[in-house]
Length: 192
Image (cartoon, rainbow, N blue to C red; front, side, top):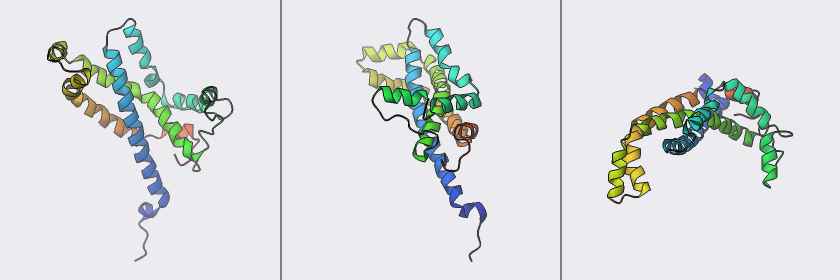
């Protein structure tokens, strides 16, 4: 009957929904992968372990607004450290990370992954610490490879913590606002 049903007929609404879903999937997947790697590394015994565990939490402790401003400076197209590093390794530099629509969402993902990966690592490390060492020793005696031990012992036993961490991160990333607002200056042109 030609009657508009408000927001559901607005193409910007659907673009925002799509961007949110893409951001959520991409950032949470990267955080899970990096968080798992960090948790596995921090679970090993090494010199300075306590210091590393403490230092890894610093990004998570920084307020999001401060983190967004810091990443805004790092992504600056003229004097940002990201472009400087890209130039030093021979990649294109002077990219407009925040102003370029094809790059702005990646800039937000990178900043979010840096900030929230420590949460994922901490949750998974807590679960790893609860796994009895004798399970790994028995599997090693039985000839299980490191991958088999991870797949058959580690992953099933940390699955409850993994699911909880994923639920928290998905909910948190679906409601992201402050990082995007500060980092991209609320520009409709970047559509992040």
